[in-house]
Amino acid sequence: MSAAKEIALISLFTALLIGGQFVLNGISGVEVVTVLLLSFSFYFGIRRSVISATAFSVLRCFIFGFFVNVLILYLVYYNLFALFFGALGLKFKHKLNTARHALITAAAVLSTAFFTLLDNVITPLYYGFDFAAAKAYFVASLTAVIPQTLCAFVTVLLILPALLKAYAVAFPISENLRNKG
Image (tube, rainbow, N blue to C red; front, side, top):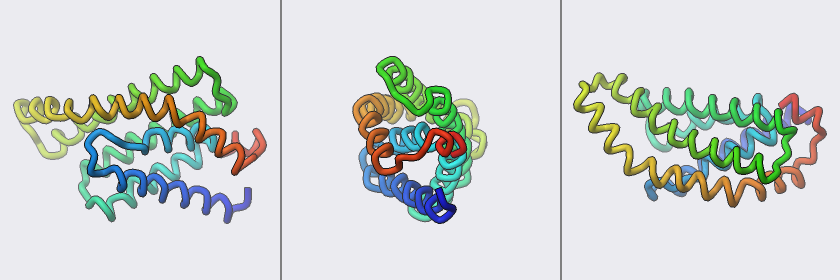
């Protein structure tokens, strides 16, 4: 893939992540970033997905505001997410079967819960919450984590196979090129 196509692919995908988050922002617990970044990481590899995750984490601040704790959360979480699912794609040779799909779906649900737990550490530390405030923040986060994990389960279960097929049709790249990504 040429450098121009590579830049276009990553840029387009980053815009898709931002647009997906923006469109569903008003519905608590409903999101498509998980399934989109997971599918991109799995198919296109670690390097491309980490670049996209980093760009997404920074550029989304222009829409939702620059909050240091959120920027730290997004940079840490989404880069680890891209690394993990990109590595799974490499291990599974970018192919999905029923057992792998079940494993990936479970990993996506756990990752989504981890996002909230990581926020429950970063935000209280950043703002210097005392124990009672940190505990209240954790309890309040439960109202979002339950629908988010359910949403991750449903979207990864139902949409992931279609996204991977669409990528294969639109970007029929060789195994060698995909592994380098």
